[in-house]
Amino acid sequence: MSVGQTTTGSFTIAHLRENCIGCGSCALIAPEHWTMSSTDGKATLVMSARKKRFFVKKIDSADYASNLEAARSCPVHIIQMQ
Ligand code: SF4
Image 1: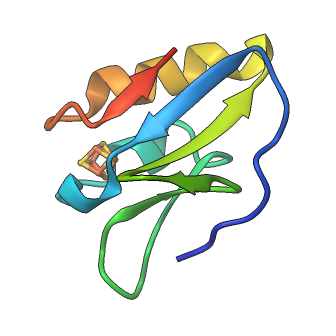
Image 2 (image 1 turned 60 degrees about the vertical axis):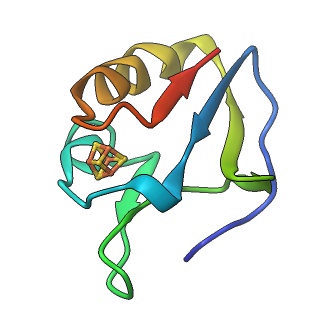
């Protein structure tokens, strides 16, 4: 799992990684933000920080649309955009 420092930005992505079923949709749509782990098959939110059960990171408005599309594509609805 790759976890780094939370970046700055206007929006927040929150990922409930433990419930990921590894479909790969988010990584296909926004590969600069999402990668699939070769260890457990789940998606990893790149450069996120753990906050209780979620992995979170800030993004700028330029990255909002692709991540919103990724969130909407998630079959188990575990990507939240705030
Ligand atoms: S779209 Fe959802 S279930 Fe599919 S890999 Fe991404 S976070 Fe996991």
